[in-house]
Length: 402
Image (tube, rainbow, N blue to C red; front, side, top):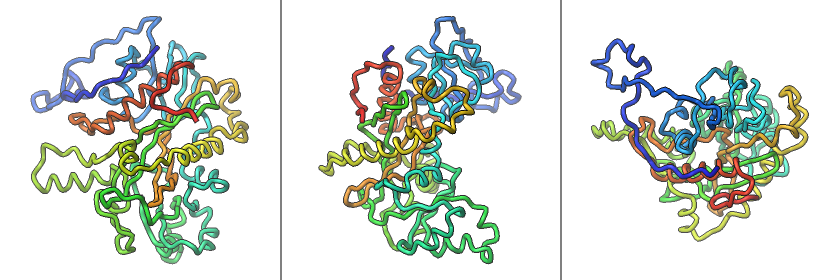
């Protein structure tokens, strides 16, 4: 089996969830044609998709790469998967329900040791040179109070993504958050606070970070993709404390910066081109233009982070509730991770967080625009990722084995 690269394709009208039962077909601008029936033969290669709604869209890199390479999506309740010849499970976490013995799983059962913000900050707190000083609040509030060296912090909720409720704040603001006299509900907020890197790498005077892709296989192999998506803030950088509440300066997440660009387009009356802020760049092009090579530091960062967490043997004991031992099932597991890395002005990398379900879309949310850099990188990366997963002898072209 060799996975071929998919080409960009834009969406047609979205299908109406009510189909031919729609009560207002004359007003509804969605597609009402029936889905073609899928006949699954015994020798068909099938996969089961248990994940977020936008990854279910037929135009994502994930689905198109699989389905244009002769995989068919099995549409049954997860409890029935064990009764089918499923080759691949793509889910949000390691499943607790039974699976066919031959099924390959896209998560390790202990991957949360790295992908959970609070677990990562604990597991990498010592002997790891690439993590900004971090604290879990309120659990480590006393330690945070004793740490006097840093005044500016970035604060992230433990259980939220897409930049939701991420703040850059002063030390005093954080202390006020957990002062019962000033904020009685503050104790209930579980967040990770990290030292804010105030001298980040700037491109066109704007702060940037990188979404890098790491593939784990069989519980012992680590692969790093040689390109990454460079994400940019939408306003010129300033480390003045008066700008800390401006997310468009200090947060590079696309979900945050889309809001600014969408608002500006609507204000200008550009209602038909509101695809958002997709000013992403290629990491390979960036490094070429900067004439630097931080690959050795990045390799060290990735190896240390994975070996201290997902590949750390001390976490095997907590897997007893899965049913099989880790040694027995690890050959069935792989994991595609999104490493968010920020460089400072001296090109030292810092690990910000690790995403266990990196976005594999490459299209605008409405499916009518291809985001070129995103799609090119994700489609090439994911095709090679699947080739590595399903073959032990695939020749690497984009991934490097660490």
